Length: 418
Image 1: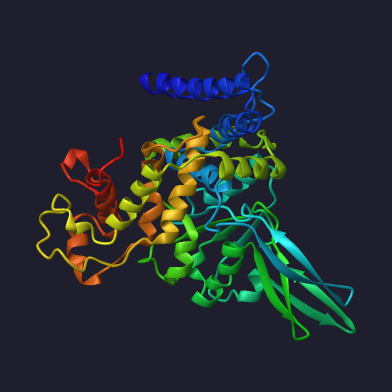
Image 2: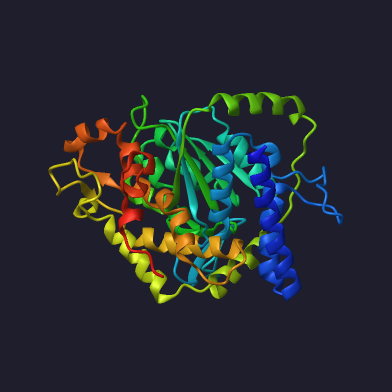
């Protein structure tokens, strides 16, 4: 009963923010919070009751972890990636055998904050992608990444039949793309996604001519990967990992989640997911976040301190005091791109709670998920990782600590601005 009351209070708080922004006349900010409420909880009638014709993510995604990934996906869609500003590109296009060239402005809001999900297959990640794309009103594409998948199969290529040349577009040419079991593909094929993720465009050759195709926008990649100890996997290249704004660890479903899914399956066939927002609205809200949400110098300093704290976490005596060798733990730490992703996600989180100013709590909220996949640790210390439940649990403790075990992490020891 207490949990239900807490959830009801949480929902009431969201709708109070929405109403306040509406009364203040902040049209785009209101539009953002209204859309997020609709995505999570479905549309509501004029009397405030749920509209069964427009269910939200919480009606269709069962289990705490799926809901957490959905909220991460919302942050990713409304956040800019690591592009700092708009740019002008020369785009060459081929139609009916003729190549034309034009200059295109690629806006700063082109690429989103891509999301990586790490866990075993069969946990509902594909279902999440389909439900989310429908709620966002975005097109959805999916790749099943396999060892024999080639780079051209996941981008675009030219083919010839007789005298005709055809351009073949892959599922990458959608707003929301699921790269399922991405680390089963070879590193070369994994890297083929890199240009699209970073630039929002894809380049290829046709008749010796370089052609650039701009992807639909907004554009976000959801990658799923199996744990590295899983047979038949290739570690993602560091450059590829770095392009993902967040990595959400996806454990096996607990009993409560399994029961909720089984019960939901009884009514799933009668549930239709309808859009509650659209690409145009999302881009408008993203521009608002990019231009209007303030990040003070104190918060920028805090973000920088957190990232620098990741370089050598054992410099802090309260972090893993039992480890005697205090140097060489981190071979490659989170870097400047992690700081950019942290800033952008924090701006989105501040906007969603109805504020125009980022606070430390916004920075803390997704810090662990933004940095956990970027740590390249010294494998000579595997024995230490094993003491704490393996590499992933070790990194979790390194970043956020564990109050019940009286363990401190980076978030505990880096001073928070007042």
